[in-house]
Structure formats: structure tokens, C-alpha cells
Amino acid sequence: MNDKASAAKETFTLKDNRTGKTFELPVIKGTTGPDVIDVRKLYADTGCFTYDPGFTSTGSCESKITFIDGDKGVLRYRGYAIEELAEHSDFMETCYLLLHGELPTEKQKKDFDWTIAHHSMLHEQLVFFFRGFRRDAHPMAVMCGVVGALSAFYHDSTDISDVKHRMTSAHRLIAKMPTIAAMAYKYSIGQPYIYPDNNMGYAENFLHMTFGTPCEEYKVNPVLAKAMDRILILHADHEQNASTSTVRLAGSSGANPFACVSAGIACLWGPAHGGANEAVLNMLKTIGSVDRIPEYIKRAKDKNDTFRLMGFGHRVYKNFDPRAKIMRRTCHEVLDELGVKREPLLELAMELERIALEDDYFVQKKLYPNVDFYSGIIFRAMGIPVDMFTALFAIARTVGWIAQWKEMIEDPTQKIGRPRQLYNGAVERKYAPVHKRK
Ligand code: SDX
Image (cartoon, rainbow, N blue to C red; front, side):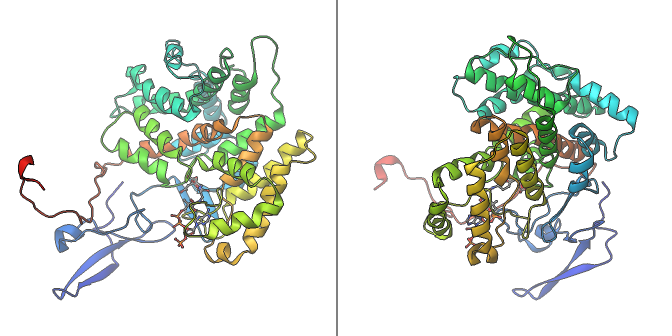
């Protein structure tokens, strides 16, 4: 991507009141969203670093992939609103859009579907890799390990300077994640692995590999497959979130894409990020009943209590998470399809949402249900075990990670990410031999 700083017409004037010197910092405008102040020369000019732990006001890169407006609850993939994609697209088409920047033609879509399907099997030797895990290993631990190990099997697609290798790695990662996740589940329950079926859709295939057995035909409920496909679309990408930033930082050193995605899986696992969908369900089970909600709302507001309402709040969305609205609708669709008349956890979640959204603390701090609030209830209704919830998030987010990784690698201005710090540790000290220490 071209460096726009030199072309910038507008600037910020920075005055150092310690010296009286002023500095002109270029303002760079995007096609939409906040402008950025280019501080790349700040240290060289002023001898100062910026300071922004948590990167609340920092743009780490330039990107054309996903746009979020946190105040308006806007999420667009390559300019297309998430509501439209969730309604009219499917996950494979969304993957193509995120990777290539345009919606595919009919032929491109057919070819892409075929390519992904024909990469969905794992190298058979990886089966032995699974055997190294305890049966009760968390699926995210297995996903981290197996995805990282793919670089030991697919040497023919790790030359990141070769566009064909980059694309093949992207296809392999998107295609194999559901297979790896389903195998992690089958391994944990001691059932045989079910191979992918190239005649099935992506989401349908995952459900088939997860719940099918060699003993009888397993028919995937098309309504559940469609709901799962929509959930994958909602989770596919989300700008420079923690796990995507992890993938970009790992990739900036030239590490191979399998290792980078494995790092992204590790970061996503945290309960403050993708691990929240599992944490929400565990929280709802802990709260247990509607009458105990006030006690937990009180705890969530108590600064001295580490308890937080999982599935609430977001660094960017400060009015509502557009994905949460679609997830809530999908939740009712799935429960209706499954004939679940009463789902106490859903009733508890909806009452919790109602109470929280009327509470001043949550209103003032702009804490609303995020994408993770309802997903766990849907997955549970589908029969997916709680510890597989974040693995599903990782399946969906792999396309976002690899699209952002590819964009970074193909950016001619790209360089290794290496932040600095505010140091406030011991200044210079002389070494004392142990017999002279007090
Ligand atoms: C995802 O970044 C992304 O895009 C992520 C994601 C994606 O698609 O990649 O959208 C996916 O990770 C969604 C978020 C899932 N996490 C959770 O549901 C965990 C619970 N939420 C919180 O941990 C928190 O809201 C975060 C991590 C999501 C956001 O944290 P921020 O932006 O750093 O906000 P913060 O922690 O500074 O909170 C601001 C205030 C604080 O109070 P003060 O210190 O200002 O007094 O709000 C409070 C927090 O204490 N607060 C909460 C709360 N979340 C924030 N209080 C109670 N319950 C909560 N859930």
C-alpha cells in the first residue's frame, strides 16, 4: 500500500512545552472512519514514544478488509454490511470476499467451493499427532498444537514470498480447521474420526464430522447447517482485534502462516476474547436462576470483584454489536427448529440482558451484549459441548486471520512489528558478588 503521509495536506501541530519546539504531524485520511495522525517520525523528531497500552487509540496498519463503526453498530466486510451478508451470502462466498476483495462470479464461487472441499482432509500421519494429547485436553489446546504442526507437513506452501504458496496455505487453513476441530471432539469422546464429505457444504460437513459415526447414516438438519453457516459469517473477521493483531505481529517476522494462525488461536482462547462464548455459558450456569441476577450484577459493578458479565462490553461497539442482534434472532430460530419450548438458560440470558441494559452502570459504561452472548446458547442447543465453542469461533475467524495476514505480507511498506515501552524499572546498578549482598 502507498505511504500516504507524504501526500497528506492536513497536519496536527504538536508543541513540546518543555522546549517550545513544534512539530507538524501528517493527518492521513481513509475512505471512511477516523483519520489517523502519522507518528512514524515522532521518536526521531521528538525523542518521545507514544504511550497506548491496550492500543485504545492506535491504528496498527492500513487495511481494506473490514470496517467497524462502534458508535453506529456498523460492521462491513469489504464494504458489504454484515446484515446483508448474513441474510443473502454463505460462508464460502464470504471467505472468497474477504480473501479477494470482491464477491465471486458463479464460476469463481464453484471453483472456490471445490478447492476448499478438496483441501479438507488432513495428512493421515497427523492422526498420530492427536494421540499425544490427553483425552480430556481442551479442544483449543489441540487446535493450537495441530495447526502449528501443519507447517511440519505442508512444506510445499510455506514460501510466503510466493503468491501461489500464500493462497494454498490460506485454502488449506480454511479447509482443515473444521476437520481438526471435529477430530479434537471425536478424540475426546473416544469415537472414530469421520472424514469430510466433498458433497456437503462447509458447515454441514463440520456437523457431519462432529456428530456422524461409521455405524449409521447421519443426516444434518439443514436448518442447523444454515444457522451454523450464518454464525461462521458473523465471526469471520473483525478488523484489528487481539487475535488478528497477534497473527499480523507473528507474520511480520516472516513466520509461516500455519504458525501465525496457531498464535491467533492461542490469543482467541482467552475469556476476554473468543473464550467469552464458553465463559458466558459457564456464567449462566453459575448464576443459575433469574432471582440471582441482581447478586451477579452487583458483583459485576464491584471494582474489588474480578467477576465480569461475560458476553457484555466491547472495545469498539458502544451502542450495540450488530452481530449480537443477528445471533439473538438465530438463537430463537434454532430453538424453534429443535422444538425447544423452554430453554431456561435463554430465559436467564434474556432477563440478564434486560436488567443489565436498564442498569445505570452498564448504560453509562456502554456495555451491551456482544457476539459471544448468545452463541453459546445456540451451540449448546445444537449439542455442541461447551469446550468446543471457542474452537467454532476459531474455525470462522481463520479466514479473517489469513486474509489480514495476506494483506500485510503483500503490503510493500510492511516491516516487522516492534513496539517500544515506558521503562520505569531500576536504572543502572553495579553487579555485587553474592558474598557481598545483604
Ligand atoms: C470478542 O476486539 C474485538 O473485535 C473482539 C471480538 C471479535 O470479533 O474479534 O468482537 C470478539 O472478543 C468480544 C468480547 C468478548 N469478551 C467478553 O464478553 C468478556 C467480558 N467483556 C470485558 O472483558 C470487556 O468488555 C472487553 C474485554 C470486551 C472490552 O474491554 P475494554 O475495551 O478494555 O474495556 P474495559 O475493560 O476498559 O471496560 C471499560 C469499563 C471498565 O470499568 P472502569 O475501569 O472504566 O471503571 O467497563 C467495565 C470495566 O470494568 N466493564 C465491565 C465489563 N466490560 C467492561 N464491567 C462488567 N462486566 C463487563 N463485561
